[in-house]
Length: 119
Image 1 (cartoon, rainbow, N blue to C red):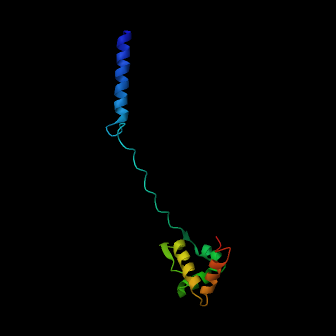
Image 2 (cartoon, helix red, strand yellow):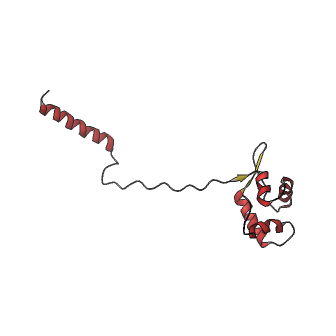
């Protein structure tokens, strides 16, 4: 193989490989792809133990508050897995801070406390 033939073969090979990698839409005059849209943050779910710890009460009180409408109703994710949505608990805390009756005060106290709800 002569020097000229080898150079031509290499040159053609480079051009072919460039054509293969650049593709029809990846040329220099195309705009960059837009950034993917940010996904909504996933919902956080809490067990009754976690809710009880958050408000400094026992688990039975959490269930009692849910029955009385003080806390939102839990979501049944599967058999034996019942959880509270954190977003709904925070909304209940906001409404409890505007309410001044009985057991709502317990929740309102956590929202107005400088420490806030326990994590």
